[in-house]
Image (cartoon, rainbow over all chains, first blue to last red; front, side, top):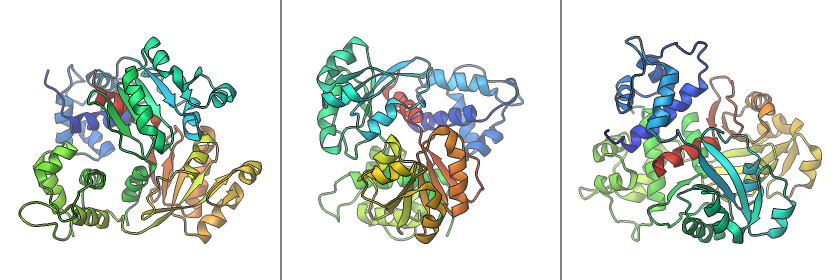
Length: 206
Length: 206
């Protein structure tokens, strides 16, 4: 199977999200590439090309079947298996994510939180077990945690990221406003509120 | 001037971010479209086409001048004027954003926080003034606040968003895992940790 280029992967991910958000009254209802174009803002031919990377059949001549398409995208993008996630740094931001119901239970399982402040680990109320930071390596290996939300202060981010990488974490969602330097086998995605505000400002127009 | 299509706007925004993150030792150093392609992962011809939407001159035959390019993108995307921002909902997540130094001071100015819990408003330490939620309309109008970070619980999000829209807010960064129904003149950008984790998982590969 042909590898899917990164921009097509990104579009497929967003198409999947848009399809999930649309509530199709009947599961067999079809979606044409023009409808997909209206939902996403991309040209129909781009969408057809992106879908051509997927394996399988997504409906007849009238259009695609949304539910099948969602499953096909999930499979092609490797989102069809569940990954374990931890939160590192339990200040305001990190502790907010401990309680977020937004983790898709099918795809991600939040299993632990870590903080260097032992007192905080003991006091904080949490739906998942919390551990002092020195247990990070042990817990990550024992439970095969693959991904981490990095919510420590800016000055602690690089050090914590390195320890996560050494413990076997392969993906870091970085909320600290710093560029992390990590081995190439660790993927990083930065979530900066300033970038989100910029994208929103662009959408708003001048 | 030709309007810039939304996908090109998104790429230009990311190119600007990548250029900002690169530290060019000398400001006059140039960047070729091949270098830009290596940094972003998009084909050189796409980048050249995107840059062709911008007004102005971005360097000679040897390549673009990064600083000029950043200014050109900022101007074309309407990011060259400062916008006022507020935080609505001061639970863990919202109060975390009160203290975030990640707001680009040139582009965004955080000026107020709101919460329906008057006690919380009085107790919370914050670098910006906090107000009880019933003052939202008044404060937003008085200070011409344009954008809001919506950090209230899921069940309160739609109501709060409507009140923000009525007060004149034109852009909402929505952290609640719900789809907001708002008038078309209000732009919404959803920040869902699950979506970020998905994008990270795709980057990590199977």
